[in-house]
Image (cartoon, rainbow, N blue to C red; front, side, top):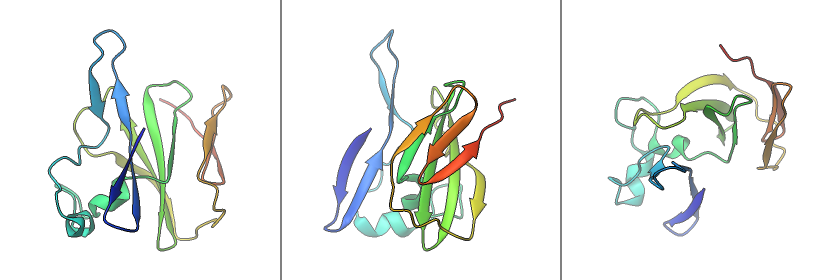
Length: 129
């Protein structure tokens, strides 16, 4: 994970995938084409959602370790985004959302071997296909 400061008051997290064999580093979501702060509020290419929602508050690996589960909370809507690992270049899919935020203020995450992931104060049961 890397941090960026886009503008004055917007912390921005960018998660990276590192291929251990080659050492190649690939962003989970590629923000490199966005140069102005206003661009982060515009819809992402191929999405109705703004670019900003693809920079989550927290993330965790799926129990199988083949996906990155990212949680973001914007304006009282919590969403769980799922990105395959290694990244494909596509935007992460919205796997679940809720209109109520837990407002926990806890932006950490963890995962267990039993399929449970704790992210942003939400205990999620993850079932993998």
